[in-house]
Length: 201
Image 1 (cartoon, rainbow, N blue to C red):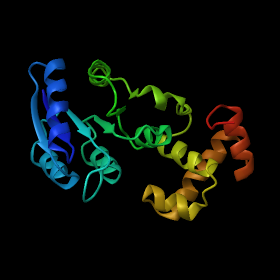
Image 2 (spheres, rainbow, N blue to C red):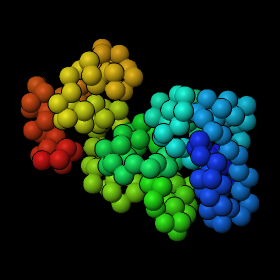
Image 3 (cartoon, rainbow, N blue to C red):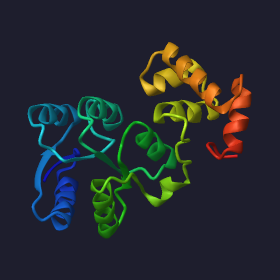
Image 4 (tube, rainbow, N blue to C red):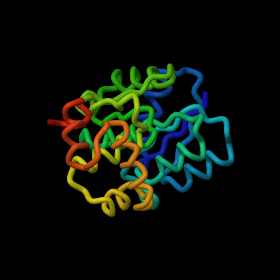
């Protein structure tokens, strides 16, 4: 199997490569220090089976690179390996298509188990991220993400800026959210979402 590790710290890349080699004895591991190089490598070689992506990398950055990877290379699962232990960031990564979110402070055996689960088809969150609500059956990951930013008190323009989409697209997503929750206003949507456990109460 082919694995691409994207992190700007060579020492951590080597450490993660060692974990991957322990889990998958036949793994062929490639490394990239920034997102632009990683995207180029994925474009040149369609044989990768897994990407391990740091968020805090120079240039484009992991958060911006993640949706690009999922759009351009949908068959390759991406696991975010982050120094952050923020549950909201973990939920954001999953909503943007990551197959896993692991903290860099996780034990080696926990990382190994997570990678095995992802390649078996599961979506894996570090324990801290499990506090985030799972997606509603009738909402897409992007609609759920819009709902979460709505719950944080963000106006449409700010949500659009955070997600890198047009404000008109935010309105389309909100319309779908209102329809799914059977409500007609932002306030009603938040109340219903909290009642269903989609947002913290």
